[in-house]
Image (cartoon, rainbow, N blue to C red; front, top):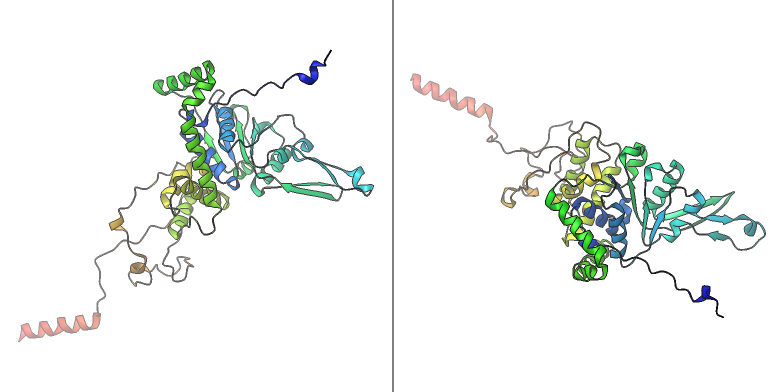
Length: 373
């Protein structure tokens, strides 16, 4: 009689809902793609009520990343469970250092999903965010340390009704999406219809979206590759000015928002296949970066209308011109670049010209003498 335990097959994993078939929630899809393109953005925090496709979208993104590992951090996990542990007995006995990998090591190259991140102890959140930002996990114990690569896409979800994250932790999360219940009847019916079709026949549903899924996966690979190219996707001072103006208007603390905003804008430019980062890219991702950093009571800044190309002023026309130089004491410290302070409005042309006042007075005096004569 054979042992059935050796012949028993592992149950097959349930099919995943394809990312290409997710209806609605455009901000969620955009934020997840940005974090997948550049994990150094710092991950995505998804706030919203139950049943708004938070975990479905995260799992679908991991499949889109060429089947990257999808690791879930349970709510009751310990610090060693997350970061890993060191065997001090082996080290003190003179043997090789023995490291037991944790969830951060398993998530390397993939996606780490944290449900109810606002309910985790602060010590775990600190380790999690440190690894997400640096791409390295450091484990230390009694003077012995071990580090390993831990570059992953962090996706954390929370229900605001169950508590908030401290502002210091919120600022370290790169992007934030605040979902709401779908109130549009047509959009709600489309979401429900797609889910019922998937539950009824998942293979057929996935086959119908296979072409779109492959196209998204290819676009994601291309965008990630472009970020690794030296000198690719440059940004101008105009882009820096746009990012700084938005952060100043939101009254954010520190400069982390500026850096994340520029990274997200660059990732969005890579996704769209553009040659350089433009102010339009900055405005396209600004709300994802500033939603959880904006001071309470500060309204959302709307993107300015695009300036027609013929109305733009060439840089050489304004740099060094006596009519456009800022007055002394404005704090500009850019040498001959001709750029004004972040957030300052550009100078507008006025109908003035330089006048030789003594010569003008002499001419007027001569004219009066001629009339009297």
